[in-house]
Length: 296
Image 1 (tube, one colour):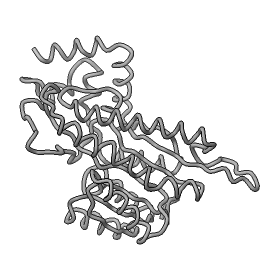
Image 2: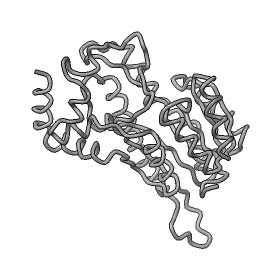
Image 3: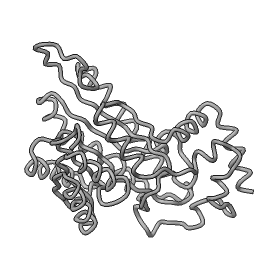
């Protein structure tokens, strides 16, 4: 058992990818885990792994693009394991297409999945957490929430929105006198609440991340015509290599666990990807020139 033993964690998007691996690690920590996703069979498999690892698991089939289902998930989790200590909004997906081909339906669907699902979790849990005096939201965002990338316009826009509401909630809580993490040295009789809003920015990850709507995948738009993904990873431009180099799901999941052990506001698991984001903001022209050469 680990230092998180007995903690009650809710994880959305728990049936595969980062979410499933994160739940396995929570099981090894001895946590009580409420797993939520749409695919019940995969959820049952992951729940079994959590139990075999030493944790407790409750599964809930839920679609987090529906506000009422998010609120119902919170109630079900509390009925199963009591008060929630950490809510991890991990559910997310994208649609691969050119930005000019994006439809209003595409944009709104990804906004509900990648952003509003977290907002609804805030609304469901924040009143109770403020009264209790502690809690942690963890939003699994993306480097695409800091710097958009080609053929993922709707996804990047939704993740930018998720990044923004996390920043806003942190500031609003601070203005209410809420500290962003547990005090390192608690004073006798201190009652000041703490609540952490952690935003995680993974880079490209080896997972089953897929399209939110399979009918909207445009195969030719997944990468520039004539460019092999292996060529991107071997490119001499370090920014291009950073963006194309994937990281294992276990690496990202462990970074999230560390953010629970020592709550922080922002987590960047992918170091080189982080540099690429900074470079894109400071000097975007070199990256664009490298991409233009790839597209010729």
